[in-house]
Image 1: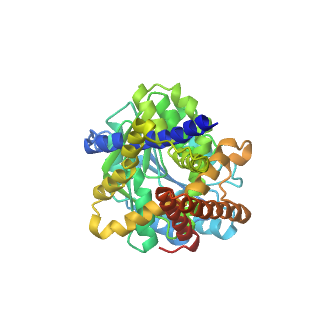
Image 2: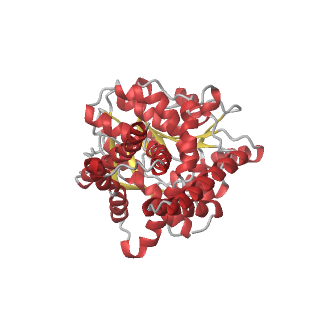
Image 3: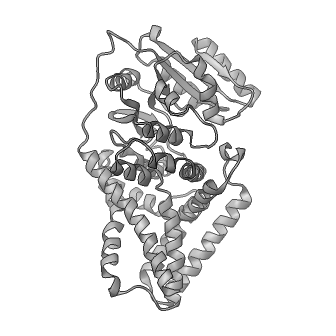
Length: 447
């Protein structure tokens, strides 16, 4: 029994260590970044279709995005702009239609939300005239040069399926919450040429790559990750244009951050269930497969943390915590345990932020990460095991689910804190304290 518990204890540590080691590889590659080749597209301008998927959009964000889209520099005779509207509210539908008519923008409205965002993309494919499809989320503000630079980079490389831009957050300094959530979201900055995950907006995708990979599929809420994984598995490459900063919006509150994280964790579970085998069978070298699988399933490390916690409790209670006989494993765990913090440091540095002035926010971002462990693990498992059409429904947890998951989290962390103090385990006690502070910050929406 004890041998099994020790095995699970170190196995969970190894899962976390593998993820953090992958982050070190990302840092090394990121430091060696070279700008992708670009071609002059003024002589042979490819047709481009810009798509804005919307659903009962916030008017301010929508107008800000539309204003930026119409100012993007690109020959109008080669540009098609579409708003894909799935709005269910009459006033939202009327507003979007009025804006599109006044700006001469093509509107595609659906009376059904079948397939949700992916369904909207799939529904529009027959009307797409562009060789490349550009996806822009409504909370983003594309700069004027966005299209020219992004299209020039993908047009230079026929084997590339899509090119990602460098997401930055235009509201980073608007509040303490956005300063902290921006740091958490900055973890996605380390995209790699050849291995960038397809995430959100600010992306240019080769239309043929979408068709070759099976098209948009609305059976999950992770249509971007899902489509990107299938494109890479078909042998297409990807690019990351670091110098092309694409302003997006960070969550304005921890409540928004939580809802977003719940969706992402659930989407990650669906992605694991649907796409892992596709990647394993894909046309990529083994090391890139390892990196892709590790980085795109990063939420698993939080589930591993939960397993680690409960096995640690059992081992402490049985007075059987692994000691010096496991020195090699402890050394690996100790070294890799600092990798995530080193990664956070590098992300902050790459963003051009002052470590001295940003240290408080960096620490709070780490604490928020600890406070997210239970509800992330819950939603990850939810995504892995759910079946049927409900998989594609963009919903967040119900109030009873929040109460149960958070109540269990607080009960476990406080009980474990008392347990750790009683048995004199200072490391476990400190870890539980960070977990408790983290969930408290999220639930009270304060920092």
